[in-house]
Length: 395
Image 1 (tube, rainbow, N blue to C red):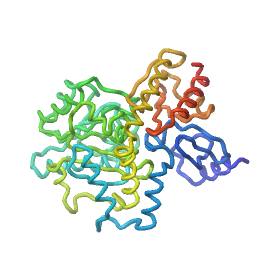
Image 2: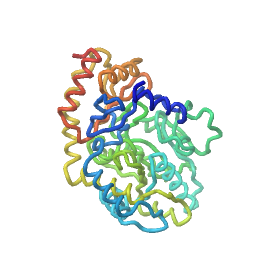
Image 3: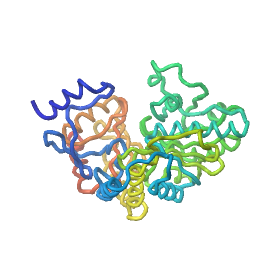
Image 4: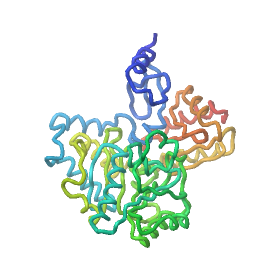
């Protein structure tokens, strides 16, 4: 029996079986190259679902975590810790926000954002509590975030869900106005819908949502868990439209795979969280904060964002030659966040890519997702694309 098979046999016996995983166990990675327990190498173009934005085991992030691990691991939020303060200062300086709150994941960040919006209106005495979110969106699997995720299939078996969530079609400002009213506390949306199949709204849509929130007295919450940290070519996707939200969630690539989430907010809104209103035992711990600080240093101080933009330009030049050929019906996305549209064939194409040594992700039946790290070596990227062209009959 192979080492992959041995470990998977144990995993199937002791782990919850709520994931669909291929028959290999990844044990090592550098950049986009990963190896399984039997020594087989793959080129990883999904990067932990847009999470390892600097690639696997980026040396600066590794060094930062190693150094902090020798100093201080955990103190809880009963006490200040220096990396957390520095991280908050860096995020505030690189965004619209005045303050930051830290947790451990995107779902936790969205839960906190929802609570913050409701608490803000509670303190104002407005009576507002409804959260408007959008069909096709995804905000997490915890009950509040799940309630904001307008996907009935994900809700099945978990009711009754929390009340006060209203859904609207994505990309339609008129439809949004129709569902907003005197009870609307906030509008929660992704700048592009990732799990919805890389759906980009019409130009000006975020500006229209901002205007609708202002007109109705509601807060605007942006879920930048997947779109942020340079994924679209700017640090935050909202920057493309020149608007600013009131609250924003971040996670995934913030820690390059080290678990961390953040909620960023304007001063007036952040003030609604006072001692006793919300907390996280692990949130903003020294290790996670050190990892995230290293990520931001690479992106903002060492040319990481520019490197990502160059890689995206190279990638799209090649992808455009695929459009309309073979199974590729179209392309979606922005920057290094790509959806390859192949109606009814996404899962088959994903399997063929894996057989060719390239790791991607099928979103449903129709879209294959590609999210390489911003620091991807262009020769490795070309090798992966060459393999895909051969595997998918595009060569």
